[in-house]
Image (cartoon, rainbow, N blue to C red; front, side, top):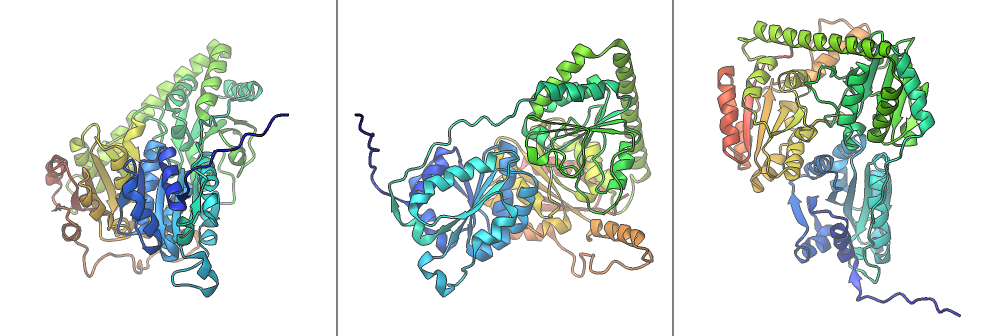
Length: 566
């Protein structure tokens, strides 16, 4: 009769040690945070974990937003430690953006001593309930023995498709409890689902019949590193590729002739952008994000709708599809291309070649129209966004990472500075503003050997201006370019749309949407946080100023006065 093995006993550790051990075990090099009293057990022990560096932010939203962009850029879990109820509350806006972007994160927050729970202590609240709507799993560690299994599960869930943030509350007394449960290894988890042959054949059959195919892509393409497979399929089909309206990543090279503008944020606009497409392939996204309600379908009436997603919850979620496939986008696109190549006849190949010719002509026409518009507004004062971006594009280093929260000037940015390398671009998801400055922090930490340029509107910058201090504190090579139009321009544009949609007279003022009286001075604000800067009003100064800003090798603010959107 065999005797069950007895698990060896280890020297007891405190809960806080197990937490920090787990971060090291799971390959987390950075802990982002803004500390408070309940985080004392962690802060006190950081020196015992030399492989884990702390990134200090002056506001919880900066810490969480920077961790979100770091995780998006590296694929490494973004880990944040916040402070009790107000601190978690301060971070919820950025947590929403991370949730919408499917960013793998573990957010923790210190909690008051559980023994004082019924006394309603200062700063106490139900943190699990606060975080729950914006995370995949929300939990509080109730005993030190739970640290190992809770953290193991948290990291697993954060990366399960579709990826997303997880929240763990950390009571201060539980962090100090002893336990014999050590951090558990996560192991190598292979999550990419492989395509079913029948599904591939079903999608291929539709595409072989299509005369006007269009592909619409989300950030799932970049997450699975499927850009090359997508390019190959688009070229084989002769299909235009349209990104979702808000894109965090580069899912398709923007200088490629198949690349088409981002999707609008309403069904009528999407329907117009799809034109007379007879087959629409959706890949790796939450189709579709809307700002304005339209009752009709976004798809052309004769279009067959196909979809490839890596998680069942995303497949046919908002719309019925004619054929859908659960597969890792990279594997699914490759399998689809392989079947098409073996079955496509000469007629199909000729038609696809003709479609590619039309796409090249369309790209050339868009470039000519952009140059014509630039010429028409070349000498505008204040300078036009088009002129600004055309000058910036001359000076940005080829290896610079671009963080884009330019909002109303985003089309000009990507028109004059198209990005093909997926590692060179970070956009925004979720729609919450203030992501640009914090995104620069995360992108710089993810790419420590590369310069970063952040494009942010003036209104957006004021949501997270404290990020400049963190950039100075760690001497990060980031150029913060503030597009300073002294207004919430996007709100004025949306006010016009609202009035048109609801029959409101158009000739009315825009209440509380100007950022004047007093004017904001970003150079002075930056100086107060240790970041040098320069104000620019003459477009002829832009190119040289950008070059000089990069040449400093540290953080630098360019406060650029621009006019409205053209």
